[in-house]
Image (cartoon, rainbow, N blue to C red; front, side):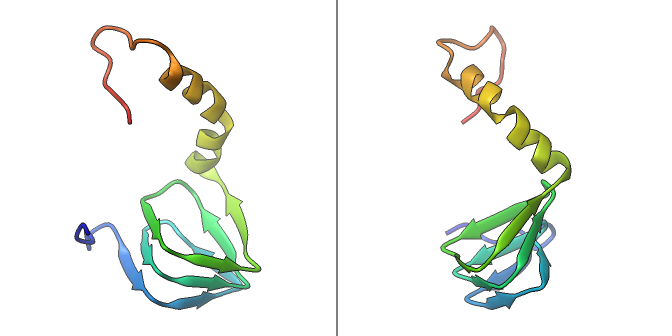
Length: 91
């Protein structure tokens, strides 16, 4: 398991996290249980591993929203046969 980079993340492990609102950006969540919360995500660094969700909603805004909007086109690019010369590889 990778180390949690403390400069970027607030670490949450094995916690029960409740509402009414909770910002995911900047958090490392491992084996957490989110209950009755509006989870807010704006595109910042965030790691979710092994978490569960009960009666939660999500609000995606800012850069995260734009990523969702263009995801179908990004999938087409990634599925194309070969990248342009000199293009970085994305996985």
